[in-house]
Image: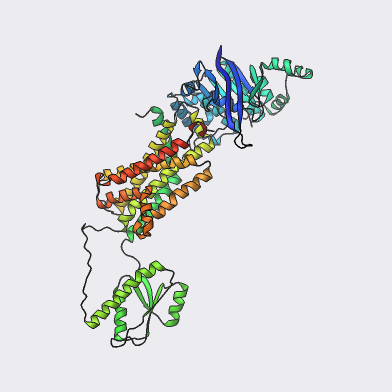
Amino acid sequence: MAIIKAKNLIKTYADPDSNGKKFNAVDGVSLSIHTGEIFGILGPNGAGKTTTLEMLEGLKDIDAGSASINSIDISKNPYKVKEFIGVQLQANEYFDNMTLSELLNLFSALYNKKNDSLSLLKKVNLSDKANSCANELSGGQKQRFSIACALVNDPLVLFLDEPTTGLDPQAKRSLWDLIMNLNNLGMTIILTTHNMEEAQNLCHRIAIMDYGKIIAEDTPRELISKYAPERQKEVVSGNMEDVFMALTGHGLRD
Amino acid sequence: MLTQKQLYLTKVFIQIFLRNKQYIIFSLILPMVILGIVAFNDGDEDPIDIGIIDKSNTILSQQFILRLSENNLFNIIIKNENSLKDDLISGKLKAGLVIPNGMTAKSRTADIKLLVDKSDIQFIQTIQPILNNSLLEIERELTKAEPLFILSLEDIKSRSLSYINFLLPGIMAFMLMNLSIAGSGFNVVEFRRRGILKRLFVTPIKPIDFVTSIVLARMAIVIAQLTIIFSFALFVLDVEVVGSLLTFYFMIMTGILMFLTLGFSIGSLAKSQESVGVLASIFIYPQLALSGVFFPVESLPEFIHPFAALLPLSILVDSMRLVANEGLTFFELYSNFIGMVLWIMIGTFISTKLFIWKEVAG
């Protein structure tokens, strides 16, 4: 059953390169994402992945088309939709001088909820950082904390915008484990990435975007079988990142 | 009715502010130091050093020097020609008087020379009438002429107001303006730049929740800071306030609201942290100069008065001063209140028109 439905989504901006002209950053995107899926939107920078996500999150107006989450129209009821989605943004900045626990309590309060901040931090393996400020965290820890913030309302759908960009292999692998654990608990996850390996390893289905359009959509296996040249269909049990992880020690640092 | 979300966010904004101890200390110390210096020196201005060369050395010339010495405004120093010139050039003395030869009652009009820096117009305007007056009094004594008119001052309020009474509302209003602008305009732009605003708006809070929380938090912070300064003035510096404290604080709260909405407008107009600084300077500095914070507006050129009276800070300073020093009631100040409400409407209009909440995050 589809929990997210989007039909012909369009987002138009003024073209910075030509005076007065406009261009569609998102150009007729249609999606149908099923409950319990990890759905990836794969594409290069500027393909329209983040804009698509932000329209679904109710952060950006939908210029044309329609979208709903859990049968609620996003354009008509953005605040209602925000009640049951969790969002991890690309930028992870928080108020200064506030500890992780205090920030989680704040975000919980914004949903009129009360949470045990320690158990949330435990979920993302940050319980020892409860009294640290966000600016004291490493890149990987920050990303995991931003996922903890996105979980305060126990969301049905979790949006992750390039969650592993800029992370080292260990931190990346640790975040993949976290995403898969959340998905195993029944959470629907939509993530954007320009990392092919991430899309292939994590996602049940992938939409490939370029110039604001979806140019292909299927499971990774089907996409490979349909589009990849013959030599790439060889089954490989590991990759260079696995070699690196094995050599440096899995999970010893973030 | 305030919601739980608004109250929690308000608490967080206050908490963030209270943890910035350096900012709190510096924002309180400066006004306290200024008020302290003025209070401990109130009314007693340092006398102006005037060098005198007495070429006559007659009874009349000595009488003139004695009369000047009796004036608290002046500190008379007898000099010779060379040392007077050196001291004037080096700036040790601001003025010099040269009494010519043969200054006697029987001689013709004596041409007493006043040596000053002619560009120092304000100084010349201050001392010239006093010197003239001293000469006139001596002349009357000698000629036994009775003055035809005397202008005497009578205080109709039977109360002594000094510069500290004038300064206190001015400093408080200026502090209020700075804290409010920093709390709304600067905060919004900084939160937007760092993506914090976007993080807040992925949750189900509405712009009104965010604005209400900022307004409440800043209201509490500014009132607390002004109360510290006000208490310091009342209880440590012994400044007298004659008006109603309720009216005084009501004007303060209206002023905070006015500058918060104007601050939001500045934050909405500015695209970056640099431009918010420039816009805030354009907004703050003319008001500092023209709103009678440190000196009466009457000391400014007359053509500026109507413009100065319309400035938000002028209206606030005027209201606070009239309540604190003249004891005016709210009903006597309704025009000032309307003026502030108009500025609140202008600030609200600009910030709601320009502040695109959806895109604010991005």
